[in-house]
Amino acid sequence: MIQRIQTVYLALAFIVTGVLPFVFPLWTLSNNQPEFFMAHQVYSVLFGLSTSLSLLSILFYKKRQHQFVLGRLNMILNLILLGLFVYRSLNLSGEAIAVSEKGIGMFLPIVAIVFLVLANKAIKKDEDLVKSVDRLR
Image (cartoon, rainbow, N blue to C red):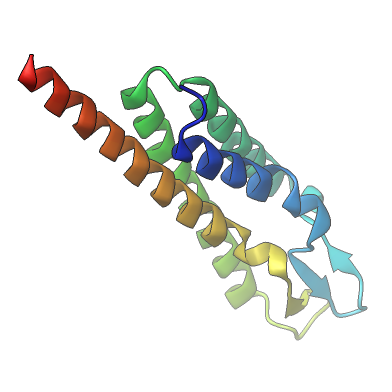
């Protein structure tokens, strides 16, 4: 059933990792020029993988265990992405032409992780409900 609440959470995670990085810059350089994720290949690949995992999770709506595992992998991927953002912002302070101001785009992995946690919680709840019904038979 594709009309479950976890599909909504996964769709929101898809939007956060697939659409919003094009809208919000990761940081602003010293010359007041915003820098988006496309400037770095690693960030592009990680955002693309996260978006793909969210879409695959939505498409695996009949296989709750696969959905749960893909959600966990997506959370790990977003944690890696967040770690890279924090590493970059701490190592490259505003001294050179590097990062002078952090943007909203740096916090998108946190929002995606929140939606993925909510989706996994709903998937787990559905799985427990199915198991309890199977016990009654």
